[in-house]
Length: 383
Ligand code: MG
Image 1 (tube, rainbow, N blue to C red):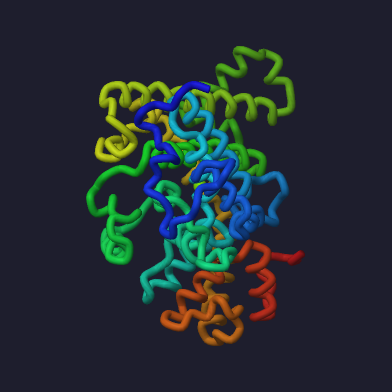
Image 2: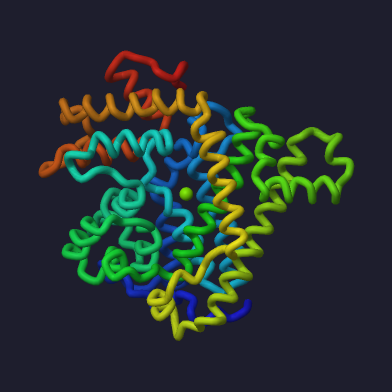
């Protein structure tokens, strides 16, 4: 194995856990964090949480779990080429969506509105809350007691006023960079980009498979059109085959092109700046990214998906029902906290306990609970 670059994160130089623990005999601390995430209950629930399509709409569509695995795969592969810490990238990738509500962004927006009087709801913060507090697996503490570098990568975004509150609770902690305007580790920057590459590609794939958009329509996006043309030129028989193969070949080529672009552009930036170590890299501008041309291409694909897929009338219809489920669940539990499991009866801010409980639900559990509490069935048969 090639040695890691001097600006890569090293578990042996970690800023550590909030509660010190003796080292594990066979794994370093980032590998141990990854294993804790895989064994958490929040991780298992990702399998029944929506990415774009509601979980019951089809078995072939991505869920939060398969999305997280794809982010880990892309992230590891880029990290290896850049000689960054693959294990830390994988760890952050597997944890990055743990705080997502049921029903994707519809669920998050509805819960954020419900929680507006109590500081709102934001899924990045919730992912951190899951690993810091909500998982209950250890005799001596709440949460998974993960390393600073893992938690830093999970907290992708944070508004300044909240960062100031968090900084008071954990001085010099994971919210500090939002006050200082510095970057997270290179591995965290990379995972963030791998997330974007993964969802742009798989939402296109799921969108076409669902029949809501077509590959022809998506060819208005230069990145898609270029790789579709290349695929057809390299395999003249492809046009006669079932369209799924052309879609898969186009997406494979698109993914490779983006991965190679990130590697080349980031390596160039790293070679120019040559940070002294992982800590110095945090003081630089963001060093992991696309080339200018690919950034432009990726933004165009995102705009297309937004207009043609995320705002498709059929998706909007599911979104409206999902929002109603979350909103009505929230009112029902807030009115009757006794209906909540004991560990979610939050003494100081009851609404936060309700929000934690709903955020942890899978799509199908939320549907079932909603039906039980309101007697209404908004999404057909509930398994
Ligand atoms: Mg994601």
